[in-house]
Image 1 (cartoon, rainbow, N blue to C red):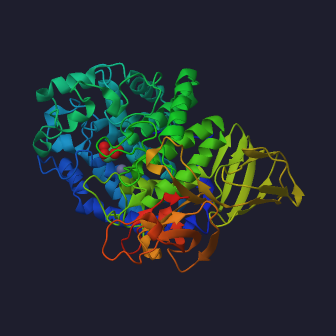
Image 2: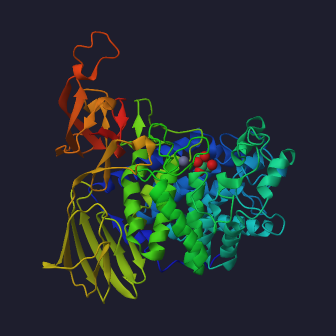
Amino acid sequence: MSGYKPTTDKIALSDVEIDDQFWSPRVTQNREVTIEYQYKQLEESGTLENFQRARDGKNGGFQGMWFQDSDAYKWLEAASYELTKANDTDLRERVDEVIDLVAAAQEDSGYLNTYFKLVEPEMTWTNLNIMHELYCGGHLIEAAVAHYEATGEESLLDVAVDFADHVDDVFDDQIDGIPGHEEIELALVKLYRITGEERYLDLAQYFVNLRGHDDRFKWELEHSDEIGGHSWDDGALIPAEGGGRLFLDEDGEYVGTYAQAHASIREQEKVEGHSVRAMYLFAGATDLVAETGDEELFDAMERLWENMTTKRMYVTGGIGPEREHEGFTEDYDLRNEDAYAETCAAIGSIFWNQRMLELTGGAKYANLIERTMYNGFLAGISLDGTRFFYENPLESSGDHHRKGWFTCACCPPNAARLFASLGKYVYSNIDGVLTVNQYVGSTVTTTIDGFDVELTQSSSLPWSGEVTLTVDADGPVPIRLRIPEWATDVSISVDGEDVEQNDDYVELDGEWSDDTIDVHFELDTKLIRAHPAVKSDAGRVVVERGPLVYCAEAVDNDRPIHQYTLSLEAVIDEEHRDDLLDGVTVLQADAEVPSLDGWNGSLYRPDEETDIQSVQLTMVPYYAWDNREPSEMHVWTRVK
Ligand code: FUB
Ligand code: ZN
């Protein structure tokens, strides 16, 4: 098939070249180390072999999780973003090989899922709750769009289109139902945007609008003998005590909260259930608002965003405190040591917020993306790019560590695709305004309302707040600069002349001819409190400096971290250490610990007998924790 149309209104990844003292080493490492490493993991985990067996018409022998195809698709998406940036022939060959494999595993009908092909070929589309066929298909489509945009080749896009057409035939002609794990909604909007085929947009709307209205999930739970999934791990996915239990309430009654299917998305008041599912659904729904102007859906998005960010989000931007459902629980439940805060959920939040930002221009979304990028997301990857957190606690006894791969390896390739597409988050064309969302050194070369513009940015974030932009355009191009939420003082000048600013943005209209915009964001160290309703943080503060959340690790301190108390008047010194953790600004705060003298083996003694010693508490950025020898870590520190 040919005739796909390119998207034109957004700033393309190929328009942006990152050149940043903080992010470039990580982006380069993602290409040179992480993507290579993850390809090996696709081999070792059997992910590619599943496609080979499916291609060769074999039966059985499926390896890994039932949605493992998605690991390959996310890898393809990440690798494709790299192909946008460089003509990397080795990577391109490898990508082509994987695409050939995927294409060869596809059935003539367009159906594609190696678990079902190898294990339960008669049971396709019977267990929408749990079996992730639509989720995998969504990742296939996202990879295909990325590959087409990078290379102009239709090899993977043809596979994705055939799959999407098959889904369109099946839903709702033969089956009325929705995916248990959202993802295909946002992918279908991407496919619509690149092909111009309305049916993909309609299908995305169908999936979003049916959620909370159909009883297919309930039917599946009641007919567990008739649906797929029995062959995985002795059917552990099916019975109420297996995967199906996640859809039940404490009384064993069906309730769809886990998959945001408890009510129409338009009526939902709070972010509920599995957090990655929620983020992907909201990202897809926001795409629909952008395409259709659906105000009721937009109101729901704003309401849910408000609930999430004021009651259900960690200071790192991480979300979803609970392990069992991998998701949200109650307002203000922000447990620290047990925090789940899956890396994929932070990534999903970035996806959703970028869409809200591009829809509304609201600085609050860009602020949250910045917070999540530097903290909740970045902590998910080791400094060497080969180990990953699935869960991101805000406190540890020293026993939580990143791993090279997981049985359920959703997070590592998700991180790879976000790093590889970082350029998408720096600038937006919002209603004809070139908006600088993130202060990441880079050059954007694009066209805004018919005028060619080139803007080069240098940035000293996150260590200090000096940003310089040079702009050249062949016509008037309005520019908007976000004022970060953490900036305590701001000064901005264009060619040496100061300009006015409001709270969220600085608006600069003008003709640009190699003009220079100098920006200074005052970057202070602040003690931050949580709302008193957050039990886990009562009597504690977190230290932030600019966009970074800090933590204390015992490896930098003489005592276990739980023994320290900060003073509210603490003087906090800062020192940039190039030799530590790939270069970080270290904070040292006045603190107190109880003396260890005179206990003489006793466990308890009168308070007045216990001297208090003045000490220093050393803190490092949270993203860099657990990159040295294991030790206790706290984000929130007791204060008096
Ligand atoms: O189910 C697919 C992915 O695996 C989810 O998004 C993650 O939470 C993990 O369960
Ligand atoms: Zn994950």
